Image (cartoon, rainbow, N blue to C red; front, side, top):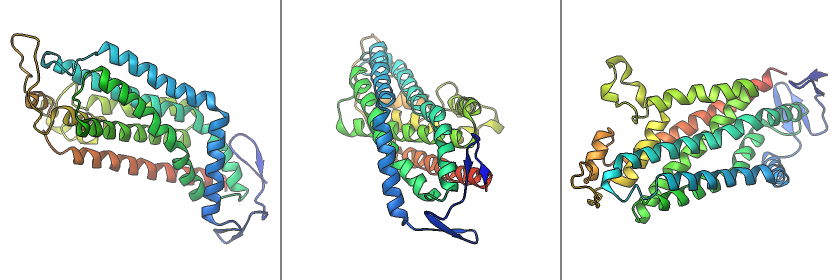
Length: 305
């Protein structure tokens, strides 16, 4: 008999699995465990539909707010820097809007997972994969709705390829944010998790290239921007909107320094091409933090065995 973090007792039973040495043999195969857990997670989301609705509504309302504040700033060369600021705020909301809900809700879910796993109901791997797939619908829907609204309200170029690039990099940031939220919720309690996410985010925002360029930093600080996930998402967004030989666009002022998109990219320390490298960097961050999430769950299990 043992105790999990919330004080609930557990027993290592043989009803579902048998244990030989340190290796568990489950009566139900892994794919079946995954299927059952996935259906349960989706059913839980449906039952707690208010919270899911709240996330979607929040993305819609904030998208309209930012869209009206930065209305049509992407159509005029005189507001190019304002448009870059709009993208910065887009990314801030996408990150915190997807990280914080997981940070708050996952610690309680993790307690249930520990109890059920220690009773040999299912494997860590089945739970881990089912959790990723169960969260995908909201992870695809919320950033997509946000991008559609803000992209058109802020007057970004009506080119399918640029819209797709902008959507893709924003979606990757949302998925990464969710992974950070899950990791903090798995590794810490609610109070520590809500403290961990801002502490991780602020340095990344600082070295994103929006406030200060890498060449303006002290020599020993110049490698740090390469560790900033916001740097890669911002560069990807700027390349989607202004890169790849975008033609000159109108200017309402007599003189516009940024009437050529390459000038803005140069000022923002962003290459005109190389969008795929920013995508790969974001995928790398997601893979790294997903691995940390897996090992964090495994470490949590070992603490109770």
